[in-house]
Image 1 (cartoon, rainbow, N blue to C red):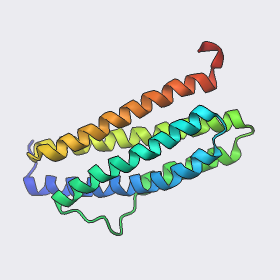
Image 2 (cartoon, rainbow, N blue to C red):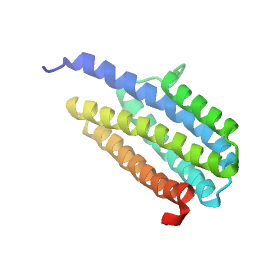
Image 3 (spheres, one colour):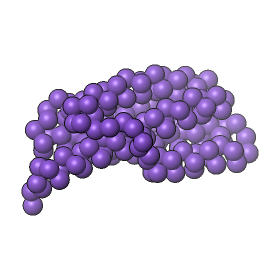
Length: 164
């Protein structure tokens, strides 16, 4: 069943707006989260990911401009929920190691949301014949997958240091 171009374009724009809102919320929260991490490697990884997110947002803004998508007045309740859950995990952690493990878990949940969103947007862009946007979304998707792998490696060190 093929979708009509106009409907798919609308989904693409809505998806761009949703992930843009998520990126903005995530970037704002990441700076606070990095300050709450006690593991120096986790702090560095979060700072590196924050810097990379700024480049990812720029690519997203470029795709939004090409698609005629507004960046104003957008809210993403999914990311807001992910961030609220992460804040609760951090505030209820009984010790620094548990808090770091919770930060990693929450970060990976957010990364998995981003990977799903960017993968979907890449598919939409391809179906719409927008190769430039498809490449941009694919590039961000690849970066998010790499970030997830880095978080997994760090999680194994933080949660189970004897295995490292």
